[in-house]
Image (cartoon, rainbow, N blue to C red; front, side, top):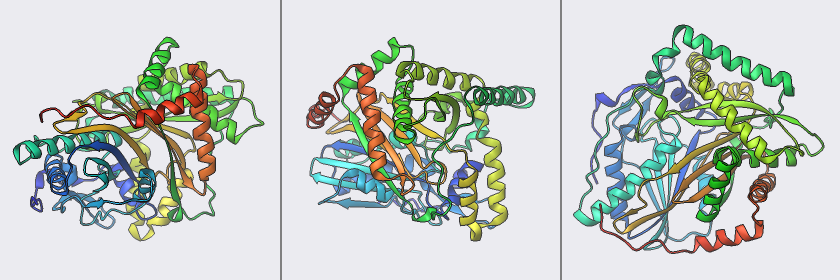
Amino acid sequence: MRNIRRDEPAIERPLGATEELFWRFDGLTPINFAITARITGPLTDEVLRGALDAVQARHPRLRVRVEDNGRRRPWFRSGAGPIPLRIVEERRRSVWEFVEDEVVGLLDTDRGPLMRCVCLRDDPNTHTLILVFQHSISDGKSGVFIVRDIVQAAAQIVKDGEAHLEPLPPRAYVQDYFPDDLDGMGHVKSAWQTTSALAGAALRYGMPFGLRPNSGLALQRLKVAVVPFELEPELTSLLAKRAREEGTTVHGALFAAFALATVEDSYRRRRGFPMVLASAVDLRRYLVPPIDEDCGYFVAGTASLHKVGDDTSFWMLAREIREALQGAIDANMHLLLMPEPHRLFAWAGRKVGRRLARPFARTISFVHPGSVLLSNLGRFTFDQQWGPFYIKSVGFAGNNAILANFNSTVATLGGRLVWCFIGSVPIVSRSRLERIGDGSFAKLCGALGVSVEDARAKMREAATVAPPKPQAAE
C-alpha cells in the first residue's frame, strides 16, 4: 500500500464558504453523496486497493483532512490516510439500500480522507462500486471522473503491474475562478436581473409553496430513501431526439415529468400551483480559467418559478424550464445565488462554533428556501472499456436533508440514464417517493408515446445484456 501520509503545503488552504458550510453541517447530519458504478472485470482486492491509491495520488482533494480552528476558518490540511475500502462478498440488500446507509454515515474529517469506497462483489467479474464523498471536497461530476480514473488505474495495474495516472494540481475555492466582470456594476446589474425575474414570476403566479420540513423532527435522525430508474439506451436516445424536436433539453423534459408528478401527488385539488424549480449548474466551463476533470466542488444552483397544474402541457413546461434556466445563466444567477449568502452563513457558523453546530444547521435548514431540485450530471462521453474492465452505468444520490428534503438526480453514461428520486424519511415517506418516481416515469413515457409496461420490460432486458469483450488496456 502506497504511503501518502506526508506534509504537502501546496494542497493546504482555508475552506471556502460553501465548503465550510458542508463541513459544519456534519454536526447535525452529513452532507454526503455517493456515486455508484456497475463494473465488470477481474477487480480483485489488490487491484482495487492499488487503483484507489493511484487515484488518491492524482487528486489533491482526496489527500486532505479538515483542521478545526475553533472560531477561525477551518483549513484543509495534508496528511490524510489511505481511502478506506470495504469489500462485501455476499449481500442480501440492493445497491441502493447500501447507498441509503452510506450517505448518512459520517466520514472522519479530522483524520481524513473525506472519501470512502465500498465494493459490492457479486462474483469475481461483477462488481458495484459505491464511492462516498463529503460534499466539501467534491461534486457529483467529479465523483464520476474518479470512477473513470479508478477503472483506468486498475487496467494499468493488470497490464503493467502498476498504475501511472497523471497528477493534477491543487485547486483554489471555486469563487476564486469567477469572472472579473461580476465585480462592480456588472455584479449589481446581474443581481437586479435575477431579483426582477423571480419577483416578476411571483407576481404572475403567486407565492410558491413547497415541501417544508416539520420543525419538530430531529434532522439528525432522518434517513434517506432512494428510488432509482435506469433508462436503457433506446429510450434515452428517443428522449434526447424528442426533446430536440420540441425545442427543449433532456433536463427540461425530466424536470417537467418530475414537477408534474410532484404536483399530482401533493396537491391533487389545486390547479396552476406555483412551484420553485431549482437546478444544479456545473460551473466548470464558466470559470476563469475553465476547470476540466479535477475533483472539487464546482457547482451552484439556480431557480425559477413556474405555474404547474393538472392541465399544464408537458412539453410547454419543459420548454419553459429550459428557457428559464438559460435566462438565469445569461443573468449570471448561477454565479450570484451562492457566494454572498454562503459567506454570511459560514461567518455565522464560525461565531457559534462547533459546540452549537446542531442549532446552527437547523437554523440554516429553516431559512433555506423550499424547492423541487433536479441535479443532472449530464452525459459522460469517456471510454467505458479499459482493458479487461467495463463501466456499465453510473448513478448519483446524496443526503441533502438540511438543504432539500426532496430531490432528483440524473447521470448518463453510454446511453444508460440513471434517474434517482431521493427523500428524507419520514418528511417524505418511501411510499410517497415511490409514487412520485413512478408518476414521473409514467409522464415521461406518455410524452414520448411509449407504453410504461414496454419501457419497464426493455429496462429489465437491457440490465442483463453482457458488456463488450475486453480490449487491450490503455
